[in-house]
Image (cartoon, one colour):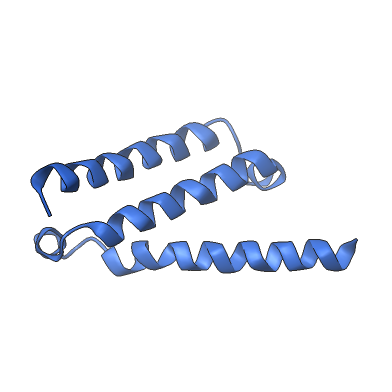
Length: 94
């Protein structure tokens, strides 16, 4: 992987983190849960972070062992499972 590619993945992570902060800055947790658009956008940004972390070189991740890389990467799987359950629940209700 070239240095430029790694830099782009790190920029994606930073951009997604800034977007999440902007989405939730003015909301309490209850309002956040009720705002489907912000909630969904936030989940999508977390998925983007997980995707980018998965593409970072192992050598870079090894330099920062205090960062829970695996958990961050695996969070995207949890969000997909959550969306599946939400979708199934919506279908059951209607």
